[in-house]
Image (cartoon, rainbow, N blue to C red; front, side, top):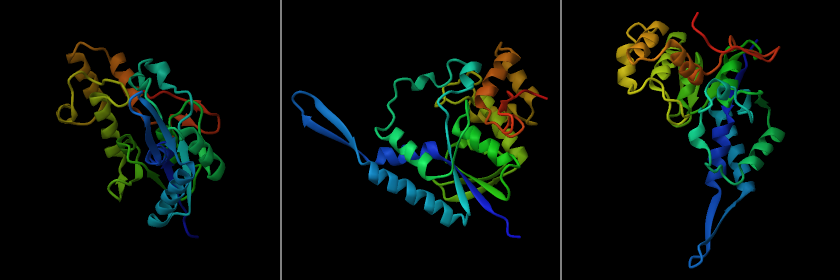
Length: 247
């Protein structure tokens, strides 16, 4: 029996890219500062269709599941400042229209309180989907998930081992993520994280925070912001979320 291959597509990135590419800024009256933004929804939908078909053909996959972020986010309960740096940032004009198009036209997954990254992480590590699963995303956060990750920007499929995934997670606990608005360990960049993670265990993270006068709880808050959920942290049958914690 031939195994199936399923693509788990980061639909947030896909439709944002397509919607932005189809925007046009028009100046109607420069003297009076009158500007408008227009967007061609038909072109944007065609772009999404072409991109999904390209992924399916290039990766020789049987189907694609488009994964979207839910309106609410469990990380705000962990750290209210999470992604607060994005407040006031405008989404592309036809982003909502394009999202609804995908929900109507494709097999999609939206899970309450989870981001698209979490949906992909949970599905990729669960047994709910048979065969090979490939995450399709340029977001470096997905390198936390053991399995196959296809990054469209470099055109290669990367196999991420469990050890590599865990190490990248601990690295992000230290470096934080300015894009997502959580700081990590103050003053710690990728090179600093590598020096700290000699073995690659949680205790090294805790000790690094302690040297900065910060508690393990603060380290845990950063970890829960950084952590992309796996099936061990989200039960698809009961829809129960379990926050990550050291064993």
